[in-house]
Every structure is written in C-alpha cells, then in structure tokens.
Image (tube, rainbow, N blue to C red; front, side):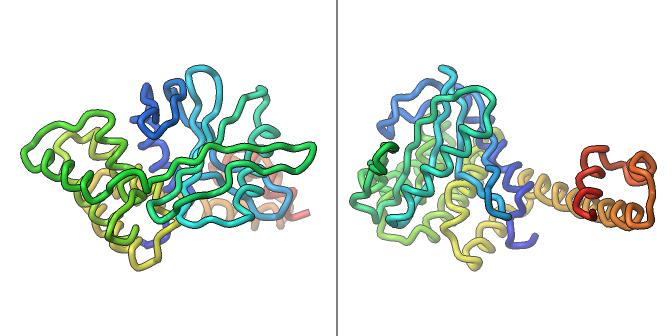
Length: 277
C-alpha cells in the first residue's frame, strides 16, 4: 500500500470514524455539546486554485456544527485559517448553521490564543489541551483492559483515538503506532475499525512519511486496508475513464456519446469539456 492516503481513502477513514461517533459527545474533553449525529463534508471551496480541507466537522443533533482542528504547534496564522474555514463552511451550506470550533492541542502545547479580534469580526474558538491527560497512564490502562479481553466503553474508545495527542514521554509518532497496534487487538470488529480509522484521521497531518509507513504496515490484513485498496483501484479506473473522455471530447464527440462509452456521469463529462474550452 502506498504511504500516501488519497483524498477518497481519507474520506473512507472519516466515514468509519464518524459512523461510530454517532450518539456520542466529547463532554469529557470539556466540550459539553449535543450528541453527534453525522459528519459534514470537510472539503471546502477555495478562492485559490487549490482546495482546502478542515480536519473534522460533525453534525450535532441540535442542528449545529462542531468543527474540530488537531494541532501540535501554535502559530499566529492558525486562528486566521480557522476563521477562513468557518467562513467557507457558512458560504457552502444552504442552511444557516451555527458553527462552534474547538482546537485540540497535543500534549506539548501549554497555551494558545482563543480569540481573534479583527474589529468588525470577533472570532472565538474553544481550546482543548491534551497536556491535561496522561497518555502513558491511559495507554497502560487501556492495554491492561484489552489484554484480559475486557470490552472498552465509549469513553475508552474516544480516549484511544486521541491517545497520540495526549501528554507523553514518547513523541506523537511513536504514540500513534502504539495506539494503532493496541486498537488492532480489540476483539470487537466495530470498535477496532472505529479506533484504527480515528487514530489515522487525528494524526495524519502530523506524521512523517516514515511513520505513515509504520501505520500502514499495522493496517495490513485489516478490513480498512481492503477498503483503501479498493478505493485506490476505483480512483485509478475513474482517472482512466476521464482520460478517454478528454480524448473523445477533443475529437469533437458529443457529450451523450462520451457518457455512454466511459460510464462517467453527465456532470463529470460536462466539467471535463468546460476545462478543454
């Protein structure tokens, strides 16, 4: 498996995690929100040529959105970026959602700004500090429970997902690998998939390529790896069909004919045609 997690494969992991976050809250992190009912898209339309993505956006049962960002560093530009994300979410959604943003900082962060005053715009986030959680003690406790075959409750599972971000004597990369290994030993398949997918989503942008390879090695022979492989093959097939579509359109083929020979939907073919003009 390639070390790069493709956008579509990352979406698979997000869906795995979100499915199991349903009916849960993050109250033990100091976020007493309504219960989670689903996942909101993380891809955001950008004014620039490239697209941007938030970390996680949950839809809550009180019809609000919970925007989570996972940070291992503090930068003056972070708050501006989070504000821009929320503005784009507001612009994207047809419904006027209330958005609450929480920034979850890894155990090495002691403090970070929670207010950005831009005059007419006053932007506030809620900061959650993993320094308040002993990752080494939590790992040992969860390890002991799994070794004796004891089931994990909802709070245990969520702590396992966020374990790599907690305060620890080990760097985040090693914590991620250890946590994933622990998650793989869970007997309940639903819990195993939830924990493994969640750990990868939470740590993905903070790991080096070397440690991403470690994580993908741990994923081998699991249902998640199979899904990612299948998604990768499907993505490759779609790219091939799009190449055929472009060639046919360049030769003057009608849109309906291109749809028929490639199996692509009409909207995709129309977009390809627009880019050629």
